[in-house]
Image 1: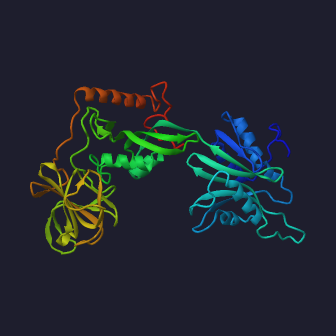
Image 2 (image 1 turned 90 degrees about the vertical axis):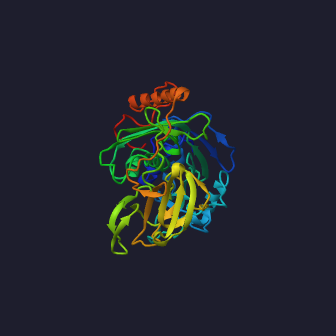
Image 3 (image 1 turned 120 degrees about the vertical axis):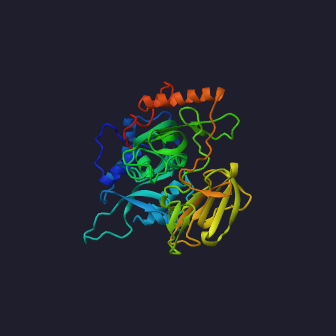
Length: 462
């Protein structure tokens, strides 16, 4: 087998293969080489850029040294339902013997039998050069390499060496914990705006529920409004988020909320404003995420009955099946069919407050009279049962048995920290403020650098 000389110029690979190789550059801190007839060799030190380039060259240089074959092309493949891994490799156009060989090599690092539909990989395939009659043979292409992500931080690659053997490498990224600052301005929906600066779906959902106590996203948010989130995450060396942690700070339109874990609570952090006042309102302003108000409280012409009468709640337009959230902690009082309301749900809260939800398509699992629910819990789904022209939620608020306008209702406020808890909260708040003032850098010298730069800008997702 010809030895690889890192001083020798790297051959020119096909553009698609170069793209695949460039993607692997961010994936390797350590690697192990597994050959069918050779012992496992594990690198004892991280690869620097030069060593990684040499490794990549050794893995793919054989693609340029296959006599009788064209330059390789990278072909994306997804395993189909009921398909074997070998069958999926065959669909890339390679010879049956190559497909069998590569699966046999992969057995050394993964279960090649119990695979799931949708599993994806990329195959580098070289077509055989045309013979004297100008015709190549179908299924005679050669497999030059294969790359498959096996976890958020690891990738398997198989490549053909100069002597024609297939070699297996496992590229593992280092995963680190960091605190991320994601700041920007509203452009489109709240979800789209936060996602543009690196917010994950889990964090965006957490923030949306948090602000639902104070902000109606369908009416109160305007283009250009500033926001900022701080949250923990596990991130690979290439900058991909493997796992998002809890939200530590959130700010929208100047409203600032800090996460704080109170002594003797259930271990879940609560959110407080700058003065230590719990921002969790007694009832949510919007019990459906992202819904728009289509009809307000008061007199109106009924869209089905055709005459004017009092509308005792607020309607939120949303598609069928959209989750409905419990507006506050309480006990389910009613879950039944009720006249023009269709499927109806009523929850009793403390202080003689009730909330009602009409035109439900179905109830969430386990929802029945007597069941305790928590604020923000999914209790039902939007529908159009009863007297309704289309899917929407009819939402009511009751106080001492009387319906009141949900918009502007003066509901009880949250708790206020004091004593030792207030001191601990201030210390934690100051730490967050210092990070924001530093433009996204951690103020503790031993802490990792923040992922994004200056506050108020819209940095791109790494």
